[in-house]
Image: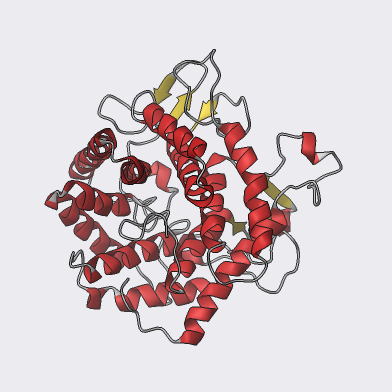
Length: 396
């Protein structure tokens, strides 16, 4: 791990911020002890479900789907290994949340081309967003690492089989949307770089199983990404949701991290060169406060810069460290200002404000920023956070 020469106090500050992210997840989860509404949550498909976002000014709370459920569980699993208070609360949240995640995986025999994928929002939901589902599978892998239960890994492998076949197009690149019942995938938006980050699930599966098919699947994703970037116009669309962009500046949904994983796994220098080019484009967009553009971009870009630093420490230079350290620390320190620490409302305390370009607004506490911040802050405190990393991934 690259030594950022942070003081003990600053490391403690990042760890406490990560702990509060965990409290936000615990506090806002729908549980038998603290249900969202006046019904028996134990009999509901929302049992163990978390929230995606809260907007107090509109009295609006949105329940989560597979994407953030997987990411939340991965973050909580890593947080449980850190020296923080009340870890039993995180363990209980994982126990309840994992049941909801498992219920979302499709094993409906009526839908043979959907088996192994994930229902997007609720059990039986025919719609799937394959990129969201990939993060759900990363949650399965995190549960396997936490509990040692082989069934979680078996489910993740079954997802990988679906993702690399029916869940992707003829080039092995994920569909935007998939109808589990009809067994058909489509790309409704532009064919953009933001889909490539899902390839990290193949990297993780290869690390766990050693099966060469997962290396091949990752290579197909990254080769498609190369073609997309080469054919894209010179301009990007940094101020729109990344799903509407060919090239995403700020939040590329960890496509750059997937490129670094591909270089580590397959040894293809061109992946590293493309990551260098793209990270330099990211660095050019940072503002004076430390924020990056896009929804969640400040935390996504910071995590990718941190990954580049850790690789440099291992002898793989993506961008020279002296060009990264300052921007990374500005982003990380600015990110701390986005966390809600004074409002004791269960849907607010510990959450991170998001859904705002360059993080200029503070009206929506969002799971995107909260979960990414949890990953970043754990790593900056010197702890393990393994969802969006290459060298630091795996059991510890």
